[in-house]
Length: 182
Ligand SMILES: CSCCC(=O)/C(O)=C/O
Ligand SMILES: [Fe+2]
Ligand code: NI
Image (cartoon, rainbow, N blue to C red; front, side):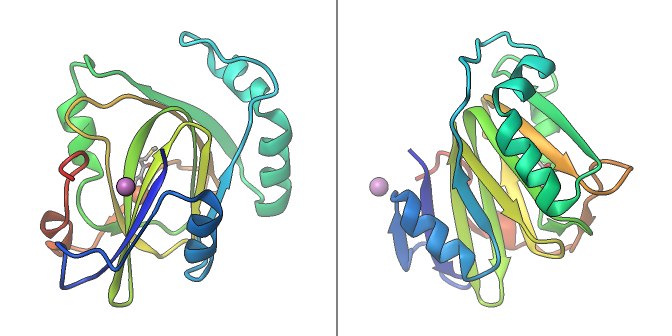
């Protein structure tokens, strides 16, 4: 189940709000310019589906988003718990960073934990199957796929070079819960 927790950035142990309600999550995130939606596949997506099959199942929503936001490319990233590179893949996103484009991800399967740092608040969002999150460019954040990562996600890119992270050098991400800690 999707979950939003909001913290003060100096109190990682005490959530100010916890919600599993999709409409409430969308409302809270909209206050910081983040879009949260739930999408339904137009046809079943089997566990071993190709990129093309995954994209075809969400074609209408993908086309809508591309028309609204002008993306240049769309790809599918997939990681299983036995991936031999899982530790380095996890580590890549664990520290606070931002992008010079919106970070837009749709979870076709599995889950992951996005944490956004906006002003003096921290917004932790557990995204699960069917969740779309769009984080505005410049928003400082980190992402934890957990020690046994398991997700398939569609990524949308505006810039031609794909994923580029700008790391802030802070240690705030280490002070907040890792995925699955609570
Ligand atoms: C679900 S893909 C997430 C990894 C990523 O691209 C990123 O920038 C996390 O912050
Ligand atoms: Fe990111
Ligand atoms: Ni709960």
